[in-house]
Length: 148
Picture (cartoon, helix red, strand yellow):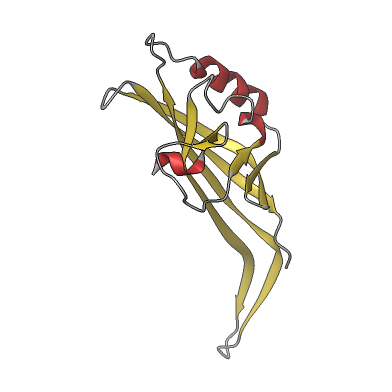
């Protein structure tokens, strides 16, 4: 499941011929891939609408709708060890996250884009089936490419 999101040098990893839109994240473009051994395993996007609802004494309900709506973008992935047991992507990952803090970042899913700002990151080291780091990046969505 993890590898359906990433392609190394035009060769699919693990699974073949699955029509999945490519995922790109502005600040992670230089660190994902073979050199740093980082892949995305999950991208989830939640949109919410901004509405204000008014109730009256006569049971009449009215509402106001504001703008495109906001939401959240969550990215999950894996950083693997190389054959020497090193994790080359860890320091590059945290450098990229530090540079993206407080900045608008585009996440594209195929031809659609979502703009967000990082809210939190987490990483946990797991030893099975091989030593790797699972990471999660949570972002607040502030814009998207969908028209109203």
